[in-house]
Length: 568
Ligand SMILES: Nc1ncnc2c1ncn2[C@@H]1O[C@H](COP(=O)(O)OP(=O)(O)OP(=O)(O)O)[C@@H](O)[C@H]1O
Image (cartoon, rainbow, N blue to C red; front, side, top):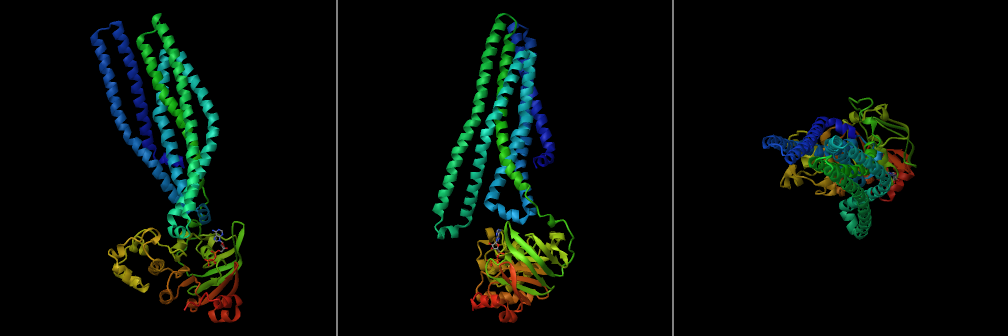
């Protein structure tokens, strides 16, 4: 994925590296010119000649300032692009991700994995790879080159010492990996607890769960803080180690240099230049070590992000037979389904004729929503056949299928945009048409009362609306979509009896001649459907119309007699 990102930004990356090399070359040449000026001054060379050197030195420094300034643009562009690009990749992954994998991950954990992963990806690509090529490597190479120009042996000692420290670094890294992995796991757990605490205010407050949740977060936070400090200390020890090594080199060069100057074998200028190059080489090598450790640790974080990016995808979205039209016939033939090891549907068979309405009823947990999620292609059956207009759903392109269905999930599918946006997304539909539909779902008065009317934002997950208003708004969208297959998973659970009755009448009138599959808990409002399927522990306990089931299906009459349906 990082490769993809780099390929996308290759132009800017190349410019950044070229500028970095030019800056380091000019800076090294500056030191050589400075050394010559110094030696010429000590040797008593004429002022005119020294002046040429000083002008050249000034030009080199000036040009370097300009290049450093120009360098800021690719640097800022690259550092900002990588994180954002990785986040876009993450959203695009979610758009194709297998629904079960998405459910298994959980939103809180997923947000943290994406946030950490995008930041780690940015650090690997920008702070480590590009920065090394742009700054550290050219500085180290040019410095070594120029040191060897003055004294090959010193260059060899520095290069050899660096290899030893690099090997030591790799040994210590193993300890760091373990700590980093545990910090990441704690952070993801914290995000999971945090997100559920942020989102479920009502449940947690009324159940007095916040103290416990805060305690949990606190414990995880303490562990993160302690381990991160430990991580930092070990990390910084590389820096200290290298500083020590360079101090030894400086002392040796000083002794050796003074001896050579005294014996006339070296000039003051060369000694100063050597010191300047050693100083110059020290910082990038030390930084490289620290960045290298950072890179290795970031890989641990990035690997978790990569695992998310490699999560199974729903290949059916684009692949498969495209549906130009949908009649709306659905047939289950011995369909089985399991959540992991737990079998939820066991060889289920039924059929729905095009243009008819079917209600799924049954006790909670009997498998109704699972049936609906199989029909919408979100979940994949483990056995049997699920035919849509005669073709198995696994052979259909789901994207083309979705052009023909309206699906209202159990938790009303309202999201953070305006009322208009929730009804028609970006489509241009005249206000009169929208208000006519809002009238049908008993929301027109309410919307007209709002100061911003159709442009009112409904808040995250529609939180500024009541549960029943959210459901009615979702219905308005389904009516406007004018699709042939309408799938409703308990769409009226939050409505009062009067509104529900009236809305159900609207539904059956609006969706007459279309295939409607509905899950309903209140049985008296579905007496008008063509067929009722009674679910019991993942199997069909009965099917037929309302009266025949009441007569012949004990499961149905139990549901009815226990009052689940009789709410008025
Ligand atoms: N993501 C999941 N992972 C594991 N088990 C699940 C998952 N979703 C549902 N189940 C289990 O599958 C069974 C059927 O669930 P399903 O949601 O289909 O029932 P339902 O009839 O729609 O229930 P309700 O009327 O309460 O909505 C239940 O036992 C449920 O616990």
